[in-house]
Length: 161
Image (cartoon, rainbow, N blue to C red; front, side, top):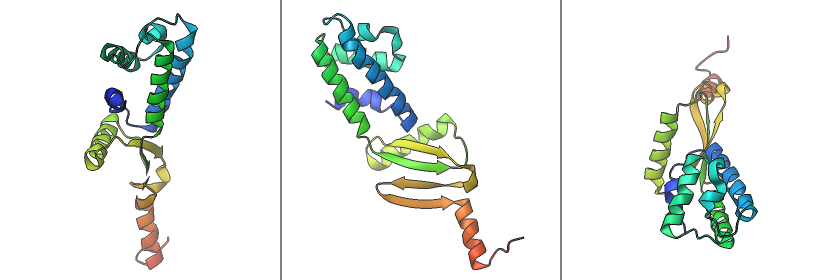
């Protein structure tokens, strides 16, 4: 069941994007039983869904993954949500608000390095000055500039003014 969702999953790069998609799934789940039981899900979500989500639903209907049965539609949405909430994530703290190109390149690099889609949970914290802090798979690393400066102060290489 994961393969039909790959097109959508590959477009999700950040935790914020995941939350938006999960909201759309919840709205679609509400609409499954609000409308005629035999309508396509794409018709039920109509214009309330984003273009990406609507296109995914239409694609799943064309593949035969989503039938007109309300129970089948609900089951598919539940499976999609479960799969999305189980995606691995990396927590990044950086000092600047990155451009979309940065996030796209980082996401692509992570997928190439690990062979799977990894969500980026991004926090902006200007106090680290530069570099980054990251947490992934139970490991924590601090590559921030503020850490390097603190180390220099502690060793006496740099004096406080």
